[in-house]
Image (cartoon, rainbow, N blue to C red; front, side, top):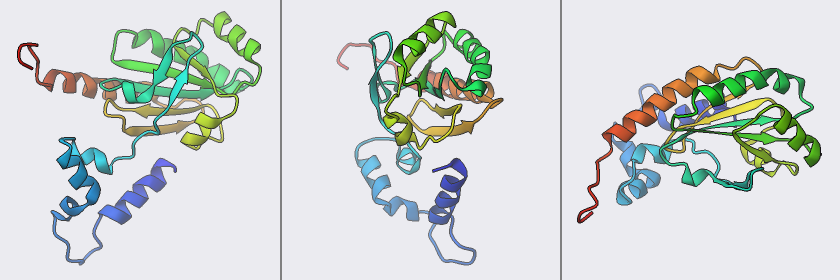
Length: 198
């Protein structure tokens, strides 16, 4: 579902019709909200569009589990070695990886390449040091509804899918800066534990 249609759907579901009698607290009876409150979670997340959960083995053998990225922003980059626009975006991706290396950000590039050797060679030759995964069967791409590349998703530190961008020249950097600032603020606001009696 594209963000615009998701926004439209959320407005249809959440925005009352003009003149309709509806309590401003009616959301509190939503079962998702009630469940979130009962579990002590942030209830606003129950109404957000969450990123599909996934767990993959990256090129370097490490496991990438989206559910374990709590507190970090995630940028997912769908691409392929044979994709001209993807190749033109590569210098920008390298810049992002360097610029945000010490920030609460994880970048994962998901390739559509079917030729594993060519894919590995391309990554090595181009110094792509961030998390790499080859989605030869398109299972992960299908979970995200991808049918064209380059395609990017930003996921905030709560796991909420915040933006979907297709094609070249997407303002990924600006979105990441805002999400990272939000993640850092959340870390600062989180209660500190002492380890004694916690």
